[in-house]
Image (cartoon, rainbow, N blue to C red; front, side, top):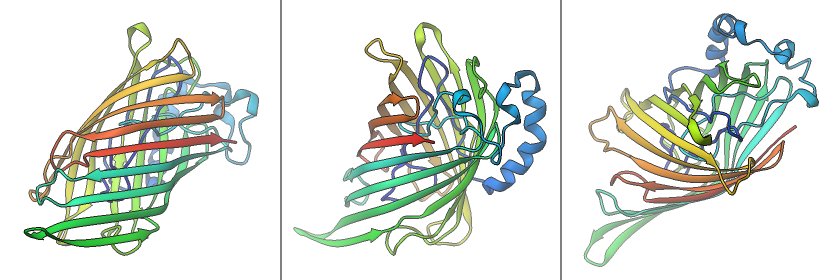
Length: 320
């Protein structure tokens, strides 16, 4: 499913922690910079985590968590929601959308849009036991749109190149420590207008995500992710809100603790009255190949006319 920050060539995928532990949820309120989020969390997180302090709590960017003490790998892909869990202090995690394709024809203006994204990469740097910095870099994007202009006639517009970069941060309030069966975090992003002509709106936009995940009976887990974004109006005069909620359920597949299936639903409403609902469903699967490598895939399917009709994707993540 797409981020609240709209870019027609860049569908958003999210993912969670493998195993019977809770998967991630996220609140999509794109309100401020990630650095401001870390500053506020510096005051709040230690108090909230006091009762859950782990042996890794003293490690930092300059004193990395030993490899033997790393948490279970947790990613923000695939699926409809993000993870509340952060990268271990002093470590780097790379989550890459290797390939993503979108097809969108069921539209109010009868246009047909096809887009492709390669190597949409989220680079994460663990700062402390509970905080990370993120940089999402959509490396290669292309989009083609055909618009009907008369009987048997249509216009064609295309663009390709780098997409809009997103800079942000994530903090975990609880759930990072081993043994927790639920987790809560905040993710803040600012979109930087770096996209090639025709791929973005050349505007800065903001998001805040608040993931909450928890375990359910019989090995299921659930992610609930309400969200709000601060998006530029279509006429580029002022901003409007974007409000969404994602609900996702996961369960191990094939009797394995390393393969997980997920199914999510996202309801999306924009404050701009010129924009329609962009609701989607999102089945996905992820395979933890090793404790530090993951392969995933899925498809986002639009269930509202303004949403992208069909968006399959595959991705790969690793940490070191």
